[in-house]
Length: 117
Image 1 (tube, helix red, strand yellow):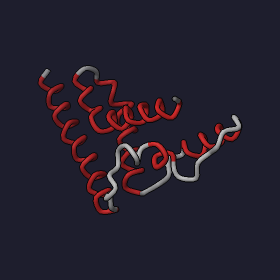
Image 2 (cartoon, rainbow, N blue to C red):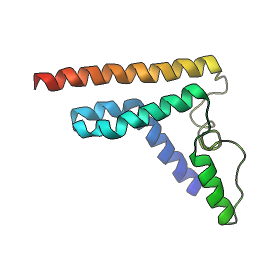
Image 3 (tube, helix red, strand yellow):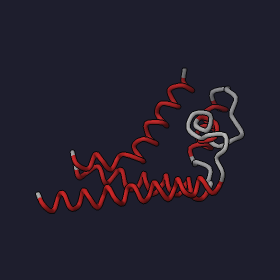
Image 4 (cartoon, helix red, strand yellow):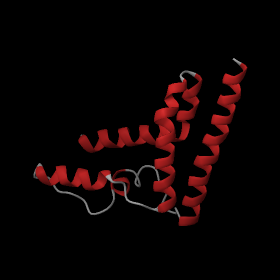
């Protein structure tokens, strides 16, 4: 049950990183949460880093007497759901670049929208 809950939370975070800039049209303050999230998401995607939560979660799992996992937090929970089997480093680069580009476009549109208001 906890594993399923973690998948939904992580999926929601990924959706927020990708599409969260659209929430700017409801509140400008969302940028203070969204921009760091996009930077973090792009960094993890482009650098092939391990999510720092992996170490924390494994520590908690061991403390609870549960089995930890050797792969990264993202690999353990999301690859079976989000990433296709044929994901290459090149495709991952393009996805990271697309994430940045999409959010730049949305932020530019939002800034123009708020300047007119």
